Image (cartoon, rainbow, N blue to C red; front, side):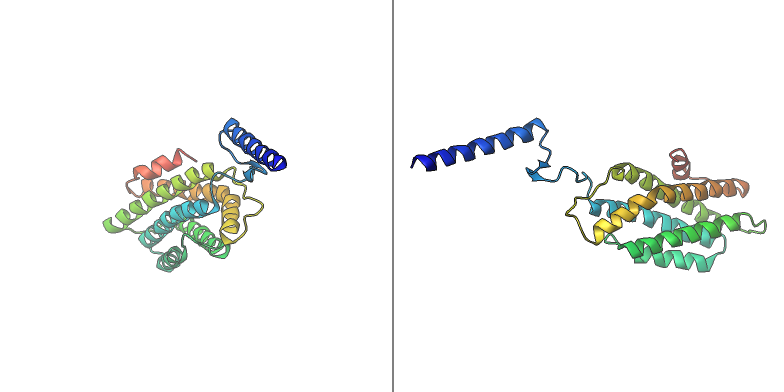
Length: 208
């Protein structure tokens, strides 16, 4: 009976010590006490979801801007990439989407150098709307980049979402840089062709 009582008291003491440790460290998970302290506060699913939200804005921008300057085939590819990108995106689909964004940017910047671009009022409106979408996408990318900066998945975290998140965190800085360059070129093109520059585009340029 005495040994059972002592065992019970030891258990109570250990439980109390664990509770005090958690309280002292603000409730954080400590090694060996409820989890892995190396895990990031933002989940891989959150990173993928946030990125897809920004990517959809970028895809929408590409479709509108490419269409406005007469690049309909490239616009169709961007539209298809946007439809294929989901919140549960795999690494392969993210790579494909990123490549389409890069190709779209190259096509736009090449077109901006063409002195023979003719645009009516409707095309100019579509181009301006596309710039607004691009600005929104870049703003989302910059915002999520700050959240994901310290992303370190738990050693036990495996699966498609973790791989996707790691790809996003690695590729995001270059994506922001490249899209920022495209946005600045778009603004220069817009000013040259009397196209209104939306507030979202101006806001995004101040962040990159």
